Amino acid sequence: MKPSTPSVLISSLPSSGGRDRFTRRSIGWGMLAVVAATACAVPAIAQWGGWGGFGHGGGMAVTAGQAADYGFAQVVSAEGQANLSNSEAAKNWEQAKSMEIDNRAKWTDTYFDMRRTNRDRRAEEDGPRITQEQAVRIAKMATPPRLDSTQIDPVTGHIEYPLVLRDPRFAANRAELDSQFAHRAATLGSIDFEEQRQIRQTVSKFIDALRENVKEYPAGDYGKARTFLNSIAHELRFPTAG
Picture 1: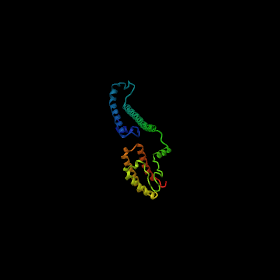
Picture 2: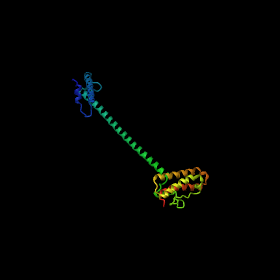
Picture 3: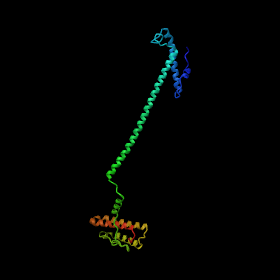
Picture 4: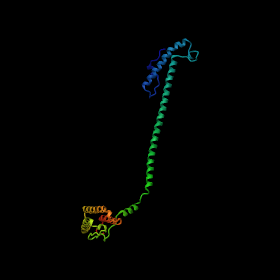
């Protein structure tokens, strides 16, 4: 019996669609080797009356065709086992990927939970936020009081300084400020931005001079003088007749 050629064996294999040509060619050559080996062994087995269960005595007649079928069955079985292993590997990959996604989601949730907890704890330490009414009240408390007509004359612009600011060392500061407020009163408060800036600058220099001599005055008198100068700067926000 003449064994089939590799091309015949390959063409007789069932098509699986996804199997490449290399796999089919390898299976064909493997089957050819099995058939050739069996064909050579059959005469010897037949001559000696069977071997190891093969032959008439073993109940399993061995022919070249049967050997080829057996070899093909072994190849198909091996291929099926490989497909099963590949399937298990794919499942394991999908499970690993799913676990990775779950871990990322848990990490993200934990990160934002920690930020939320940190923000809440800081809010507890800072205490409740102030209301708008409280903010307005605080702003008014920080604003220096307005000077009345006995402290600054709205008609002439004359300034009645507290005791500390009458010190001769501040004579130059008082003279500059008196001149600026007299001009403001004469124009009924119609001074431009540059003139307001110059008055604020004069007040600022007056405050610096007072601060340099802070040790010369009692704390209470120093505080009154400092508040008075702040009120002078604040007075620029209002009309002269107010």
